[in-house]
Length: 193
Image (cartoon, rainbow, N blue to C red; front, side):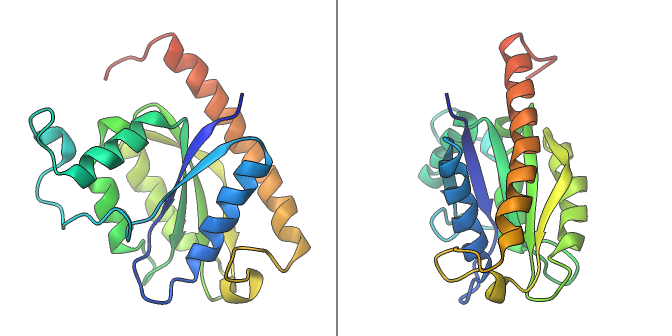
């Protein structure tokens, strides 16, 4: 039985290079027998945060928030694909996460970062490590950073370097361990909801 994973992408810029990475991750999950659901902020257009999903009466949240809540509740874990904007995370990604909370509880998050430079967005990962656990997710120890993203992947997300597939396999093996361990614990109940 495969896992269902939300691949949460964070950029809304006009020339989104990181979409290449998100597409690659969705395909890598598929090759493992898992289902990757791409969550793109251009498809799920949220306003700047005013009220969180949990602050609406049941059934009265905007339709886009209901759709996202359904996706987030349905998955076994999250792979966050984030670029690095001025040593931080993209505002669209932070805004998307800030709209939700309980939907993330007791699930792992793997951090996949990228940049056009050689550091691969690792400073954004450090901010995500501080933010995501506050929202109830458990970030796995390893990171999957990709530098020089426009040269490393083609527009469809096909990697040009052999190391990409090998490092991704190792990363996803670790992530899958956390997905399966936390799912087993959720079946037995959680401390609070």
